[in-house]
Each structure stands twice: as C-alpha cells, then as structure tokens.
Image (cartoon, rainbow, N blue to C red):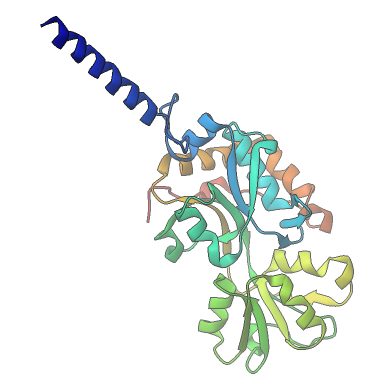
Length: 288
C-alpha cells in the first residue's frame, strides 16, 4: 500500500512538472501576468517585432540598421505604452503585399506602415487607429501638365503591388496603364527618365519622395487628392484586448504631446504643421 502511495506521489509530481514546463509558453503570450496576445508578449518578454516600411522618406526609411520616420516614431510610442523600450524593438521591413501574412503568421506583432484601414483587410486582421488620414494623389515631373486623376487615360502610372492606390487605379481609372513594383522607390527613376507619367500613392508619401535631395526640384505633387486613406496599426484579428490597448495609447499620445513631437521630428521638417489626432474616430476593435 505504501509503495502505491509513493508511486502516486511521484506521478503527481511528474505531471505537475510537465504542466509547469508546458505553461512556459514559448511565445511569451501568456505566463506570469495571465495576459495574452500583444499585451502578454510585451509584459512577459519586454520586446516586440514591428513591421515598418524601409523606403518611404519621412515615414519609414531604413539607413543601415536604423529605421526612422513618423511611422517609426508612432511604433515607438505604442511600444512604450505597452512597456517595451525602443531598444527592445526588432524592426522588420514590410512591403504592401506581405503585411497581412506577416501579422497572420506571427512574423510581426504589429505593423505600422502607411497601412490603410479597409473592410477587405479587416477580414484578416484587426486595426487600431487611425492615427493619420492621408489622401491618394499623383507625383509627376515638375513640368508636367497632368492636373489630376481625370487626366490619366492612356497615361502610364506606377504604384505598388497589393496597395490600395494600385487597386483604385485599376478599378476607377481602367484606361490608365498601371505598372507595379514591390516598392515605390522603384517607380521614381522611371518617372525621372520619363518612362512613366506619374507615381501614385498617398500624398504624404509622395511629398517625402519629392523632398529627397536627389529629386529636389524635379518632381511635384499634383495636390488633388482623390481618396481618404486612414492609416491604422495592424495586429492579429482575434486580439481585441491588444487592439483596444493600442487605441488607449494613441489617445494618451494625442493629449500628452508625444504624437505632435513624433510629427515635428519627422514629417514636420517639410514645413507641414502637425495634424490633430481625432481620437473620436478610433476603430471599434470588436467590429469586422
């Protein structure tokens, strides 16, 4: 009888050890804090992987191993609000076509990459924000007479595969000739050499490109936006708590001056005043 009791105790101890080992949760999304998803990982691992663009001056630009721009600063604000310091962020270059897969597969925890909130994307992921409202526009040569999207018939327009601007050209301006690449920076030499008539994406992205030293005076933004592009912060679809937490952090940033500081240190250098972050328009994280 005593042997049976000893065996039972040993088995219970083994089971307890096994459960403890399994409870470590290798992705850090649950653990000591009990929190899951984005909040759990931030609390338990004190690090995050954030997807940003690498070729958008003023927004997300990579130089060596350093990323800088407004989106990068917004990402730092979000991370800090989650308890993760800037030095503990792993930056991951994303392009328009891989943002949803990166989120769905867990390659990144967040995407802050001029990421327009729309219903199609909300079927796959969740969005916090918007933290900025842009508008699709055209970048043309400085001496171009192209005055807006109504003049695109027969023109060659360059954009990025999988982007909202490219899809809008296809659906709303089908007589334009669309040329697509995986990044907008590949469109700029073609515009400079006259091989395309315009580059299209959001106005603030185009302004950043036009302001680069190598293109100074060569390009202009037409200045006739033909869309509204609410930029959101992408994260896993079922992570409602994480989404709501990001929105809370954005509200705080709007009131404590950190949002304006992020703008002033990046896009504000163009002379454009910081926009007001309208926190009444933050997404309902529970909606599809």
